[in-house]
Amino acid sequence: MSKQKEIKFDIRLQNHFWFWGLFFLMNFLRWGAYFNDYGYSLKSNILEFSLHIPLVYFNLYFLIPRYVLTSKYFKYSLGLLLSLMVVYLLKTELTYYIISEDIWPEANREYKPFELNHIVAVCIGEIYVLAIASSVYLTLIWLKERERNRAIKENQSKIELKYLKNQIQPHFFFNTLNNLYALSLESSNKVPDVIIKLSNLMEYVLYDIEGTKFVPLINEINYIQNYIEIEKLRFENVEVSINIDSNIDAVKVPPLLFISLVENAFKHGGINNGNLKIKINCKVINGTTLSFEILNNFVLSQHTKTKKGIGLINTKKRLKLIFKNQYTFEHKVKFNYYIISLQIPIHNED
Image 1 (cartoon, rainbow, N blue to C red):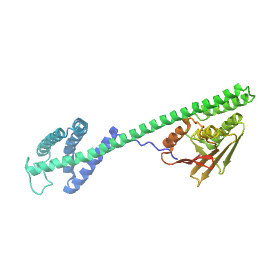
Image 2 (image 1 turned 120 degrees about the vertical axis):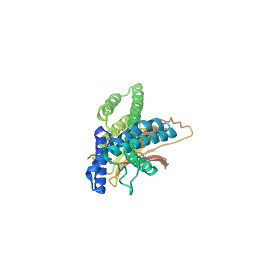
Image 3 (image 1 turned 60 degrees about the vertical axis):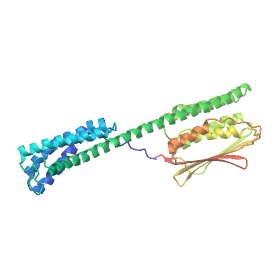
Image 4 (image 1 turned 90 degrees about the horizontal axis):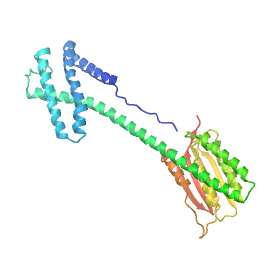
């Protein structure tokens, strides 16, 4: 799973210069070749772009924010129309007195100022420039806003993931301390062993996985084995087998993802059950998917009461946040065994 790269769409001052410079060069070469007169093309484009640029920024930074974004479309249309008329007056007068008395050499005949066809042609030309510049600018703004929203959403997901993981840890240690308290009431000589193993578990949670998104699967298996040893001190008759059917040396997983499933097996498998059996199967499928399956036997009677915990609920929420829809989580009962099957994409250690 590769980390998504952040895409930046900065609209810096130099980008404005690049846009207008390339746009000017394109028009200069185009009309210079058309008239076979690059001197005229240069003077004409300098005049036109001195009007294009103010009109574009007036539209982008005044008319659109003030009227379009506030749904005042009539006022926007009126403001744009007045702006076009001002540009037409300036362009026509400046062209006539500075460049050429032929104010529209592109046409097949000579036009005089303020003729309808000339007015329409100039306005269409300005709208063409407005459309190009505004499309580029607004597209970059939209991409930048989308990137910002993506970053906000990703940050919210990180916060929620951290909250869920932190919620699981107190939940686990609360259960373990309850086990330790029960043993202390019996003055059991197992208490020192439980304290040492609990200390190892806390070291893993507080230091080894702090700030990490993925940890080696083998470390998680060792963590689970330490937890199992603690639970074996509490239960009289418990048999746990862990079967690893693949090479998992390079496989990495989100920390503390499987411990809730193991807790669930001990919690509900131990109810009214004199001989608890738990099986954990772990294997890699096709080199792309990790399969984690846990089975526990149980005896369920009408007097059995179970308390719904937060472990499995949090596990499902974390799976959704981390893997989106690229995972499967199933649970079922078969031959007095409660079975949880989890499949997630493999995160290899490159």
